[in-house]
Image (cartoon, rainbow, N blue to C red; front, side):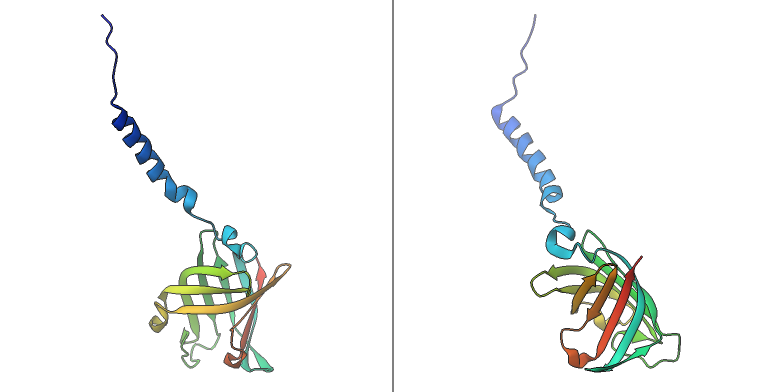
Length: 157
């Protein structure tokens, strides 16, 4: 004797809905490349840091790197060889390190990083805007307000 397995129609609809809902985040999540960040995604080594007043930037002996991931996270580390350097809003003992998520505005060629962790803890929760320019394997970052007086240059690793 053969019996037919009868699955109620609502159970099939429910199962299909659950499968679709479970897969939405995978399909809905745009990569940083899709959000216009493709040119900055990667690992970059600092080649120079200049600070001073707008139009009169002077080199300082920093080293460091910045990393932008496809998933939209960014981390930066930079070090002044002088461990006794005065603290700044971004540094402690001449060292800068923070991490967060970033979004890119292609029209203005800037990105905003929302700081999730940082050596200088006052940065946590802040949104920092940076103007960027990529030319070949060179990345140049500046503040949106030139009066802040700095420029960081990186080479793609």
